[in-house]
Length: 137
Image (cartoon, rainbow, N blue to C red; front, side):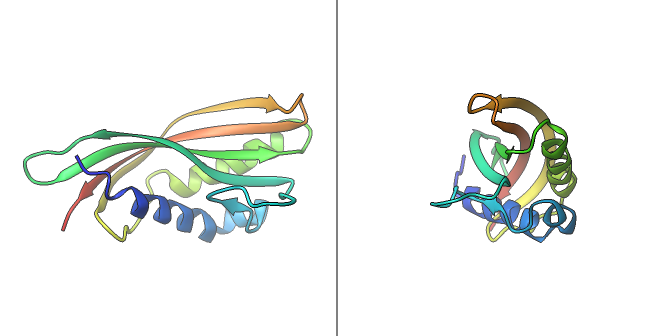
């Protein structure tokens, strides 16, 4: 197994989300790898946790990456969060991402979880995706 492709996958996902015009119409440039210090935009997207499992074979190292992209908003109700989550999903599902290292074989949506946080003041949707990557030379 190789975890070496992870950084390249994360960068490609971040770039894809940052370049998506539909998502930009909803959140502007409020797409983060880590929440910045200070005031955060009312609605934003963050890259989150991941779980990686070996899927190497005789020809190359490879892995299944399950990663989370979170949508957080202060807007009342879940409609705004769901619109952003839909744009995130549209940008990523089946995307043909070019990685700085390795090759993406597959990128699918697995599940989503919507919930209230901070005493009901925030709405959060965590979208989980699965990517198959090969560590090719």
